[in-house]
Length: 119
Image (tube, rainbow, N blue to C red; front, side):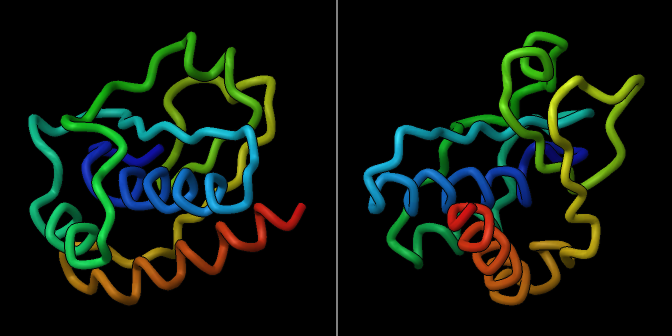
């Protein structure tokens, strides 16, 4: 989950799903935004394409109460609106903007996803 649901959350969900599928895990990530943009970040779409991946979502989607109630874990790149969900929340607020440095953002996200999948 990120503010605009267009870059970091898309990048993280796409890579999480890619690695989970490679490992044969029955886990799936979705990307959401607290204040979604109208379209995905061009830098994110371009970077994922160059990495040989397709974004998990075609447009940014809003974070809903049902999302928070039905998920096992929330990875938040920004503050959650309102009350904290009754599930595990991890904050990854130190990831740089994808528009400024796709490779650095991607590599930091991948490193954390790999650690998450090892758990």
